[in-house]
Image (cartoon, rainbow, N blue to C red; front, top):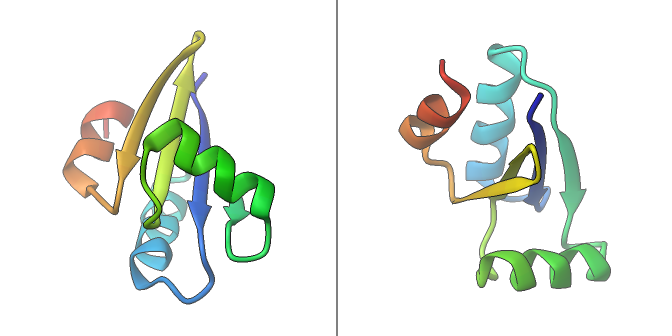
Length: 81
């Protein structure tokens, strides 16, 4: 099983589109509001090298795949949708 963590902010329109896409495809995820959670914001930058949101980290069998922004096609490919 793949675990999915989304680093986002409440005002980000791409974050909203990403969450809607995952919900429409019945995909569970955990969300971290980096506007309020400094520790998670630092974690996001450390893992992705990015300060912009959304950042999605998909982990399966100890391997991580990072998707910056709302890249629907890349997500479809990774999640085999």
